[in-house]
Length: 343
Image (cartoon, rainbow, N blue to C red; front, side, top):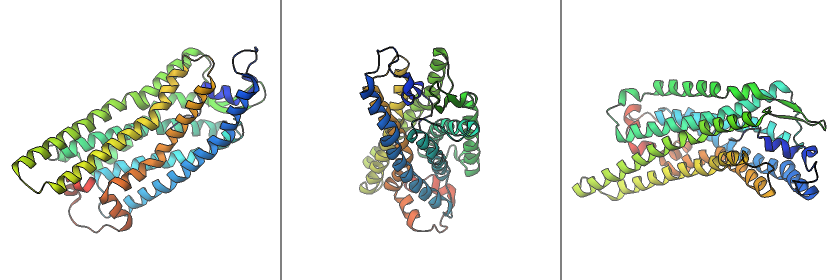
């Protein structure tokens, strides 16, 4: 999920900042390409992604809410769907600003709310994914040892804490988000970071909390899950405890789902945060930088659209619930500790 603000974003939206000294940006051709991308191509593409994300996440939420037995993974997946829905709900305001060449017409209060919610979603999504990765590790590697801790009520409280902590962690966005008036009369919603030190501090803080801190935790959990799963499969195969074809099929499906989830997180969010750090050392961004930046924006918003379809594609249990209403069968605790129920 991408924030409103980067300083380079204000640069490109405001024509009066281009080539004032006769050097730097390559005249009108550069500005025309950037302006076309920001006002036409980017809004149209991100709008399409948000529409797809709206449909997919509504399907996920409806499927979970109508289930007779809601499991612990359902709580995490539901929270990710809620975060993605909030994200695609605030996006029309940002798309409108892009389409109008960076001009914000919704007032200062709404600017602060929209910008802060966008930042909050970045932190919350990363935190929920981290908590979900840890939960999957506990469910598969230690299903009975910590069973009393993996209850639906505890999971709901954990997710409420994640949202509260995320709102607190984005206090800089609540403080600095405002409508900025440029010299040519353009009013743009952005973060008012006036000094290089403030830009450096905020960029490092935001990329750390939203990406570089949760990433190793997610990777460690899933690596441990895959190592344990394949090790147990090998032991059971040697002992001839059960038919190996079907268990191997489930393990391969689990492996694919894990790899896809991690890959989507890396590919969708990683480029944006890396470019934010690169921007700290770029005095005047080139056309190549802008091209990469726009691609990273699209990738970050694509995650909100792709995530629900990953659950539908890789989880046979979830696909079954999507088309059929659940009927009570076994207690939810028993269902949660069985790998076949979650994957």
